[in-house]
Length: 233
Image (tube, rainbow, N blue to C red):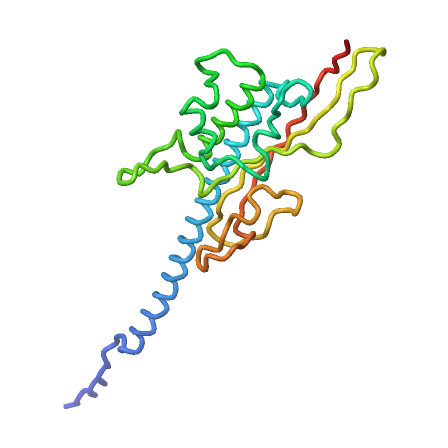
């Protein structure tokens, strides 16, 4: 009678505690990377939204200038658009808009206005839009919540403006180019705008330290080319 050979014992297969811990560590590293990418994506999305709003506000003023071309001509109005919203005192502080609401500036939506009145009115409306006058307000404080973080708007006359020729020849015109700029607070450091684009320069800080840092200044600009007929007596 033969005796069958005993079958060798099979060891139970499974994960050891060390293997489980290593797997968890690798999984957590991957999840942290995904969380970082999501945070970066949200910041980029917010920056893109801010830039879109800034372009819309710059375009708003550009259309106002195009609709009131005599407001560019310093021989036709006492205050041009460039004088109404200079780099030294940019729009966005709500000062001009307050003057409009209190009647210091003529409301051209309800009154007949001269070209100069229209320039002041457009500057005041733009100031209010930048400051968030048409946006929502904080339910607790009543403060306007604007579409941009600490926005400022400026209008500059660019170099290269031409002059009218002497009277006596055929009808002529001269050209003036305006640069309409909107600056706002960035959420992270990138690079400072060009030295020639000074709108809002020195007004923006590193939010972590509170120190002035121009690499946190965001800026968009639109150039408006205007042709002004030359008037001769």
